[in-house]
Length: 130
Image 1 (tube, rainbow, N blue to C red):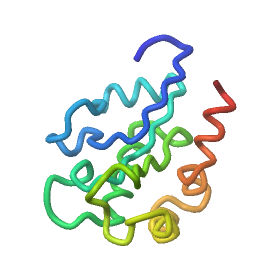
Image 2: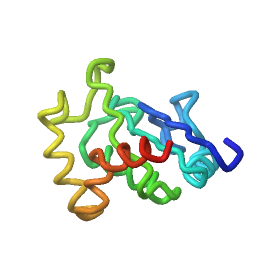
Image 3: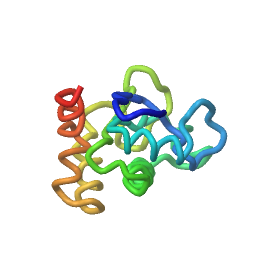
Image 4: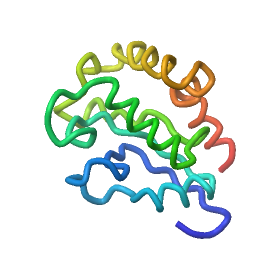
């Protein structure tokens, strides 16, 4: 990632510097540069992207979102779901009907404004920028 006019969109990414078994996911430094350049990232709900083993919870999804916020992603992140392409999903998030539960977790952790952004407003703003 370089240059001032980057319009990169990364959708369905997992590792985020936290789960080392996943390959081809951006490093923290790459995420920071992407966010600085105005890029957008959607977090994937595939269980093994979120944790190498154990229960996959909505809190783990929120942990990944929080990590991206810490890398400078406020206003530049969202849900990347992949409901139709992954076999192991977080508990209560088998399909879009579980999104209100995830949004409740996000509201408690990040507040309503950031959660609205993550739930879709950030992606719409990204498309307006490009």
